Each structure stands twice: as C-alpha cells, then as structure tokens.
Image 1 (cartoon, rainbow, N blue to C red):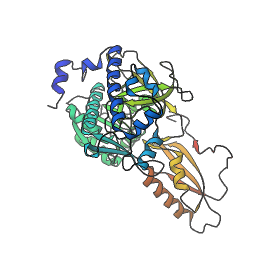
Image 2 (cartoon, rainbow, N blue to C red):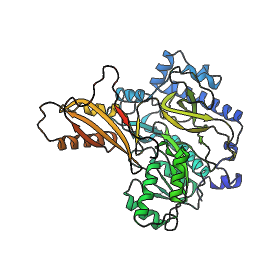
Image 3 (cartoon, rainbow, N blue to C red):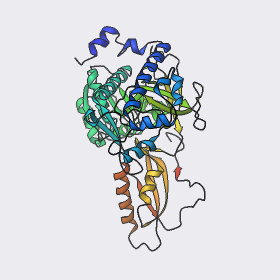
Image 4 (cartoon, rainbow, N blue to C red):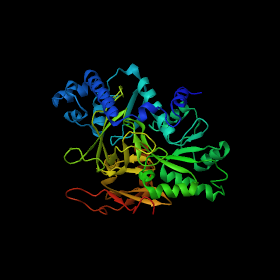
Length: 450
C-alpha cells in the first residue's frame, strides 16, 4: 500500500487530509501567513534578485504582519523569468538554493527560443506530488483505479503529475502523447478507468474511437476524464458534450509551468476548482490599477509560492483573468475555488494545450531575411481541434519556392515553440500595416465548441 493511504483511510475516506482540507477559513489564513513570512525570509536571504528588488521597493519580510502586506512587494512576470535566466544562466538569480540541491527541472519555450526552466529541490518535488495525490483523490481516484496519463513528458510540467496517482496507489500507465490509435489500444487492452488529456483531444479521441467501431461505453472502461491546458473543462456545455460522448465524468484542472503541474482541480461536486492554498497565495487584481477586486469579480490572477524553495515566485502576474469564491463546497472542502479562466490580459493563445504568444512567432519571422517581417496568426476550430495558421510575407525578389519557405518556417516554429501550424506564404505587402499597434491575431472561433 502506498505511503499516505493508511493515514487517509484511518482519518476519513472522503479526503486525502481531512484536517487540512476541511479547516476553517481563519485557519487557512493563519497557515498561509506563517508560510508566507518564512518563504519571504528565505527568498530575501538566498536569492540575489529578490534581495535587490525588495530593497528597491523598500519592502522587507519583517514588515509582513498580515496577508495584505504582500502588496508591499513588487510584481514579476514571464519576462522577468526569461530576462534573469539569460542574464544569469542557466537558471537565473531568482533561484534561492545551490545547484546541488536542484533535482528536477521542467521547461517551457519562450520568445527568445530559450526554454524557461522551473527548478525543484527534492522537498519541492515531494510537496508537489503529494498535492497531486490529494487532488486526484478529491476527483474520485482510488487505489483500485487504472490511470492512463496522456500528457506530454518532454520537459512538460504536467508529465510528473502521474506520480501523484502512483503515490495514491492507483495503477499508472505512462502513455504520454502517443498516436490516437495506439492510445485507444492501450485504453482497451488495460481497461483504464481514468485518463488525463486536453478537452479538445478528449473529444477528438472519442470521435476517433467511434469511427474505428469502438463502443466507448462497452469496449472501454474510462469513467473519469481529467482535462487541462484549455478552458473547455470549466465550461458546462463543453464538459457535458464530452461526458455524453464518453459516458464518463469530466473534471477540469489548472496548472502553470512556472510553479508546478496542476495547482487547482475539481472535486466530485464539479463546482469550481479547489486551489492549493497551502502551497500558493492567490491575489485577484484589477490589471490596470493593481488593486484587489471583490470576491467573485474578475481580475488578473497574481500568485506567490509559499513552499517552493528552489525558485520562489513572489507576486507572479499570470496574465489569466479569473474569479474566485471562498464559499464552502458541498464536498466539505474549504479551500477557495477558482471559477474558471475567463480570458487573458495579453494575446497568448493555447493551441492543443501549448501556450504560444505572437512574440514567439515574431522572433522567428524577424530572423528570416527572406521574409518582410510582417505576419498574422489565424486560429480556427476544425473537427473540434484548434488549428493555427501563420500567414507570412516573402520579400520582393525572393527566388525560391513558397513550399520550401513555408516548410522551413514551420520546422523552425515547431522547434522553438512546440506548436505545429499551417504556414501560408503571401506576396509582399499583402498583410495590413499598422502605425500604432498591429493586430496580429485573428481568432475565428465563435465559441469553445462550434
């Protein structure tokens, strides 16, 4: 039996850690304040970046007497991570432990083409996996389940989340991103009861199974589907359609590469995503003023880690527009619940679970001297999957073939961002020019499901 299972069963089989998960809001706040004070002292003492930025803002960990005092400290964002990593390679000077203490890194691509690393100590990693086990338990996973992990393992932060299922005691299948036909064969052969993928791929996989004559309810044993990477899992219409297709219950998860795997997820009530409050402090702010919004109102989510020692993240602006509620859930858990991601403050796109910014494309376009430097991203939903087309312009006098130019660009885009796109080469001066702010993205999707 996996470590932790006896503790759960002896305590309350409904919870992974009943005392923690059902504590009062006051107890949550007291816990977060104690963790925050300790974490800020660690960041100030051990990270050159944080010591310098805190001093510049005249903020010191000793000033923190309440959770509201976090507002004394400056923001960071994705650009901060990229710039500091380039300035102090390989991990940047936000890191607050010696390299010998780092045992794992995930990485995401950036506009520079240099992967942005997210480092973990052994303690950080163990905390993360224990939280994943807690989250899986809240979504109904039990040691008797067979779990098929169908997320990318190649430096992707979602890959190791499978270890949470193993810690819980479930039989775990490390499938990764295998072809659909192979994945269906795995699901059928091993009769997996739970799978984790993106919402659009869950739909696509179900339709593919039907086309191959597979009865999703009779031939497969999938009864729970965890989804992440796209907004569909928190949209009732999308979730209901996937559930009707598979005859399975769908649970939405949220995570980000800069902290750890899944940071929030649905319990069996499926009324918002329970947040990892003992690991991450949440602020929801007006993106223009930086002031807090009222509970339930939409604002930009700003996150501060509370335990991650390798690279503390203090007031990280995610760019996600969210809303939260602190109302207790019918499941008995008292952690705040995220009511879904409503949008972005920037032009970031999510294509098949991979984040891509217009700036990612621009950095590639501007390097190619056979191109004018103008470009446009067109997003469409075809057969329930998001498809990206990149329109680029060749220069006057280009003598090569459009096909070769498109193929070269497509390969470069894939290597830098991990995104596969259709590339259309246009004649010079085809795309509109803008004197102020160019419109780089045309989103032709009229809804999550058309």
